Image (tube, rainbow, N blue to C red; front, side, top):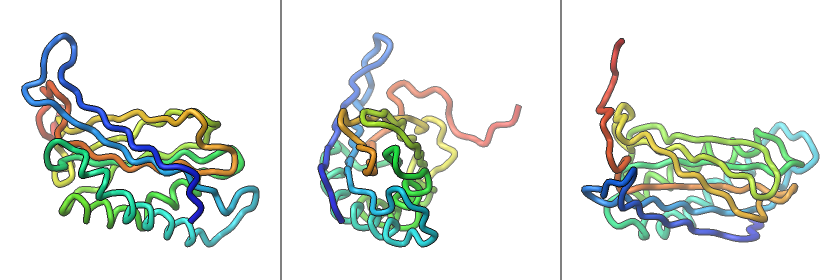
Length: 181
């Protein structure tokens, strides 16, 4: 695993739209910028990237979760692939093996971990979708954490993001689904 840098983004939301939060919500993202071993060539077997995602989760998630103010209730993951890679490289990093260490670090998680992948130049922002770890229909926990790293990913890199939150949106009013109209 060839890691160039790790960035931890930590934010606490104390209010929104001029109203204080009943309880502040903390969101933390662990961002790893790694060399893409498959730059410039088509490879059918992406197993090395599957393993990379799992390793990053094992090495980073405990620190990410420890920065929350309360227990993790929401999670999400994302990747930005540098311009010499392909979309599938990001998917390979975040899908087959990253979920297990994420769930282990937060003590479970029944719901699918929301995700997002894109290809872009250095400084590309990505919206990491967040959803409740156990209740996929908790609309009040549908949230987004936007992250970017000014010099990442370089064309031969992948930026892998793991995010957790200790609450949903600060003024939720959407409830739970499924809702029929």
